[in-house]
Length: 155
Image (cartoon, rainbow, N blue to C red):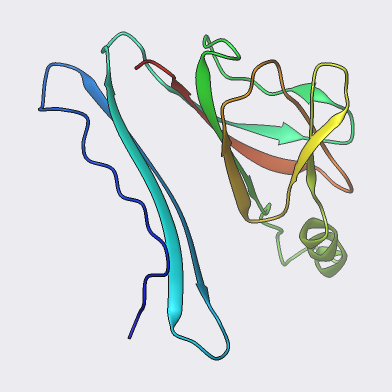
């Protein structure tokens, strides 16, 4: 049976009104060898004006740094969720195994405006952050797919 070691739950942000609703849930679920399954969960919820639309898109990231596209939103005024999904490799290719291994060991490096490393996203992983300024991305070995969601950070 599951045992919750630590969990934080938030209540919805008020009653339903004529606004869009944004809910972000971050959960880490793990199982220790000699104890029950545990997890930690952070969730927050807010409403925002209908005109404050989020941005969602994907971007190819290669070996040279490229600024992450967050649409019309401004860095510092939004929360950004970035995900690194493994690229699908056609099995009909003669070098499919080599390409697949390169993708598995590939990382996306996150850089600030001075091109200093501020983080890494491993394959099939994601992060959620409120960045204060522009963020650039580059891959370490092969072209990677970066999924981007930017949510206006209105109160």
